[in-house]
Length: 627
Ligand code: PLP
Image 1 (spheres, rainbow, N blue to C red):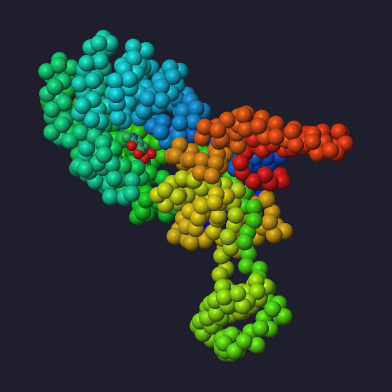
Image 2 (image 1 turned 90 degrees about the vertical axis):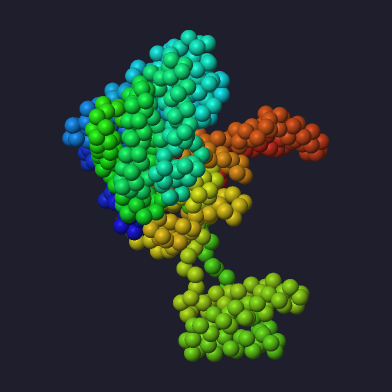
């Protein structure tokens, strides 16, 4: 377990148990030992065929743990509650979850349900997102905010205003100055008093990858002169009391509390200025950015880690707002945050199989390398190599291996070497490299997954996630590997791992290609599902929801959804699988009835062909491996 730094990035939710498997501790540090959930048992339950008591689902699978989600939400709330109380802060914390981080219905519904006791709300950034947020919040706490961010048109703003008619606490956050005219105009037409927020472009700049939205040239928000104009226009329209919220977002994965305090302090000054100018200010919304320690280093030195805890984050936000407001004698505002990554990252695990490993297995056959001695040029290279091996001169060996290989490749291209001879020279060179300890110890493990579908940030922005075998952790891994996915794309690989490693310690596959070596990708509950595509038409994985249970097992699968079938992904790119199936079936019927065999034989063959087509449309596109 130490090899994979599980205690670093995994605490308090993931740990290695005495059977050598990963266990989920669903209630974090409040989990009792008998409540631990063995992840391998979950995988067995999910993949075992139905007649054997399983659910018969295909991998890859996303396993969601609603208990972990609940714990994350409660930890965030109690960190702020503690900071508010201990610092004598005169208002409260009331967060929202940005649905773009994971829009899955059950994730959003869970967050609304778990957070309704403390008025936890949602943030939306597009029209479908506001529609889903509105319908979920109908079942939530009436005071919960629905923060409406993003670019807006008439329809978006009308929806937000309509939300207020439905007694939802919608706040229209101006991202562009032009949105103000629409808000003033539509609110009059619809006879609704809006609650308006504005997003400020702060001068404080976060310099990591995720900070490109911050600073004066950031993509979003209003500059100071735009803010002054907005205030003037609202005053002229008799609506300055509607301006109640100040929002900013300096980027995801804020690396340190020093940068956080700097940004929050600047925003708090702006807040106090808006109060001075007569706006009806009530809320400061510090955006997202609460980070995750993906590599377990707690260093904050790269985008992969942050140098603070949840408690320290809350403490820094509350302290910065309080100190500025106290200096300016301004009433303490409600503090809102839009933490996405920190709420949902831990709640799901992506499980996939390594199906085979490419080992260098070339062999040299005596007859095939005999030509080396018969051809003058090749003989010289071969003898040089032989002498270097005898001397134990590694550097020369590498040189002569290259030279010999190149000469033989040239010979092959000229048509004077056969494929068997070339293969035997490769085998000979591999044997030499192994003998002098210079062979590449890293194997390529083929994984039944698409990186583009399931870990898009790995491909797109080089983001790393902890990837770990979920079993055999009590056995020392005998190999090192890089992972290669199913897509026909050379970018579909994983050859960088947390801790700066270029390969991962892995166990040898049973019997040279097992289908029963399970790997887990952790901390990917935010953004990865939302951003994934269907490259090569590999669709979304199966999804199950696993709750802690006090029954005979420590868990219960409360929902199971097979992943997208081949028909589903074909439909997504405008094909019509039903028609495709019919036309292939039609062709089969025509051909199989004219083959001239006995009728029964033809029928059986036809039935087999049709059944095979049917299965192929309805199964997932991933490799079908034996359970
Ligand atoms: N709020 C806004 C406006 C954002 O742009 C983002 C993400 O970039 C978030 C909240 C969520 O940030 P995080 O996932 O870092 O909490």
